[in-house]
Every structure is written in C-alpha cells, then in structure tokens.
Length: 103
Image (cartoon, rainbow, N blue to C red):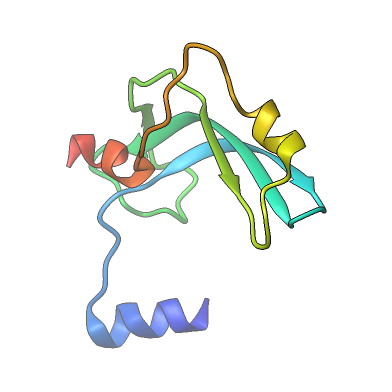
C-alpha cells in the first residue's frame, strides 16, 4: 500500500474507475490450476474513492458469469474437459473496460 500511496503522491496517479465483483476461486494442484468465477460486476458513478464504503456502485448491466482458467505448468485433461461448456464461446473480456462504461 505504501508504493501505491507514493505513486499517487509523487507521480499524480489517480484511479479512473472502480472495478468490483464477487469471485469464487477454485484450485487444482496438478499444474497449479486456478479457476475463478467472477460475477456481479459493479463500478462507481462519479466516484473513484475505492476506499470509501459510501461510494455508490452500479451494475455494469452484464449478468454474465466470467470463467477464468489460469495455469503454470500444464492444463490437466480433467480440467480441460470440465471447462468445455456446451453452447459457450471462448472470448476475451476486460472487467476494467466494462467498468469504464460510465466514465
């Protein structure tokens, strides 16, 4: 937190938006696989004070659940098979870009 504070103080860095969401994490030790389900994506309206619990947040309007799969060594076949969801595509998605919707 000290590094962030110093950059804000001396380099004039300021938050541009708030990105808040609920995350359900899952770990699979083989291959060091991390799977997360992110949902209820919210952002601030005219408020970027991310330490202020009174800052109003609104939904980005996207009810999707974002599935992320990350691994270090290899992706086990078991996990590959589990994350293949019928009728769902693979795409890039930026939570930050979605939250910049209001500025």
